[in-house]
Length: 77
Image (cartoon, rainbow, N blue to C red; front, side, top):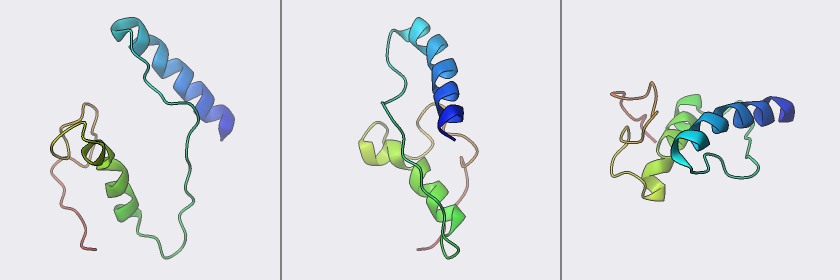
């Protein structure tokens, strides 16, 4: 897992840094193993809403590369 993440971050950051002059990734990463009673949808929504919680965008889906959750409804808590 560590090798995969390292390669992913290295390859994806080179073009981004060359184009923008900015750093794409923070150092390190956090992984979370889903437990049997964890809702995959809730965890995915939590990740998808990170830019909103951080104040980078005002609404979900406003972050470039927000992905496939655009237009989906948040699961009930």
